[in-house]
Length: 499
Ligand code: NAD
Picture 1 (cartoon, rainbow, N blue to C red):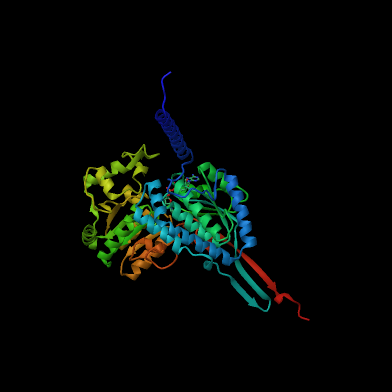
Picture 2 (cartoon, rainbow, N blue to C red):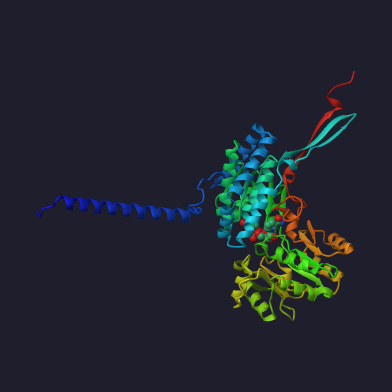
């Protein structure tokens, strides 16, 4: 038997320890990868707690139901305001991390603009101050009409403003005394989970109940159905496209629908064209045009058309020539033969946008057609009113511009292109008659004059912010009061009998 000295033994021990360490490291790595795969957890830099996140829809509803009862029975309105202040503070403390997470997960829009949107939701969504009580007093006594909560609200959110809508809805709904269960867009569940957890943590730190805001961990269209039909869910709120709004409105209970828009802008012959150009570029390129309120098509009076285009180009817009426009259309549009158009001599098409191009940078679209232009926020093109880029809610930084004979033609085209969404419209003009006429005829929820449409949600304009603009069901700019029922309390004859 060979002789083994102390040094050899030391070497063997070191080698064994190294092997064990390697094995442990390998198994830890395997575990991290498999956890990330199955549960879609956020990166390690993000906090890992799961306050308010539930696998089952029913569990999310039960937890929110219990939380709402605790909120109403143990806490006052002042407490609710304290919870809301805590939510605002914690969102702002985590602003950059949240904006980055939204951007990385959804892969649409622009990081800088996510910062602005999250900031807007946290700071300009009204709290309990939005709730007002009406009082009527007279010989017959005193009657008051006050804001009462619905209870549990089921809310569905879009991929275009995922965490922003959760922050905005949560503040409004909790201020009104409700709890909320979110069914978020599946492509935004990581950032949604992060913000739902953050809101719950903020409320708990402010000594409030847990689960005032809950979320279904893996949301689907089926979970929307279960949520919407559940007897403990008293109000439905849907922010998204037409299919969602239609689905919620058919559930047989009160629903608030915030649907699609396709906002037209008119620039008339009396407008300050330089102001119009800078305002339109700012609004239409913000977050790469994914906002429902963003300027989506422009109607310009012939008399100032060339001047307007000159200012658009001076301010950084890139004009697509006919060939480039065709290439961009080929890149971003899918054309399906229109149903029922077969007997026509010309073939008609229904277009829709290729999903992968929604919310992408203008420069990326240009490089997709082989043009290397590194520094433009917005592509523009000259088209007719029936062009698909005018008629579709395309949500890309590609802005179609239509030349119009006069203001009447511009208004007619704008109304036609808005498709009665009753959402948003704007005009650049100094003519009061033109402004009033357009506002009355298009009758949208938001109507902005001489500024980007962003001003309509409190971004550079007066008034509060909302990320749920309820055009189809008529509530308009939603806030805490929207999420309340009217309760009448009557003290007849002053509460006693005159003898
Ligand atoms: P989307 O309609 O595809 O999805 C919105 C939400 O609804 C998602 O959570 C999705 O999972 C769910 N959903 C979709 N179809 C459904 C169905 N048939 N039944 C049940 N749930 C369904 O919209 P998106 O791409 O997430 O967001 C962009 C759209 O939302 C645009 O049309 C935009 O104008 C609109 N939007 C409106 C407002 C507003 O305040 N009015 C705000 C933001 C976005």
